[in-house]
Length: 56
Picture 1 (cartoon, rainbow, N blue to C red):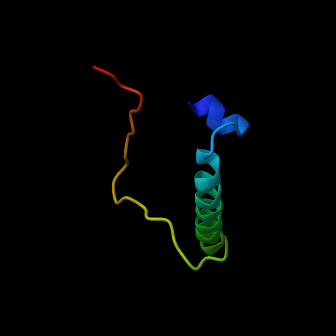
Picture 2 (cartoon, rainbow, N blue to C red; picture 1 turned 90 degrees about the vertical axis):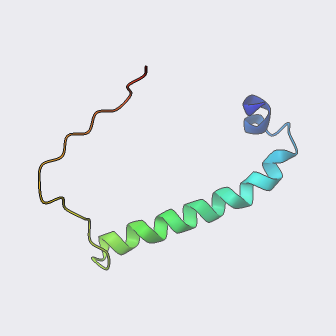
């Protein structure tokens, strides 16, 4: 199914395309806010260790 949507063979891509534009617009606006220093990154008061990709 993903391959059909990706290649444009599915009518679902017409629904998803405007949503992808909206996502790109919002994420670009957020990145711009960080770049212009209108928004600051949160810093943890203590060191943080992140462990990802664990499965049980």
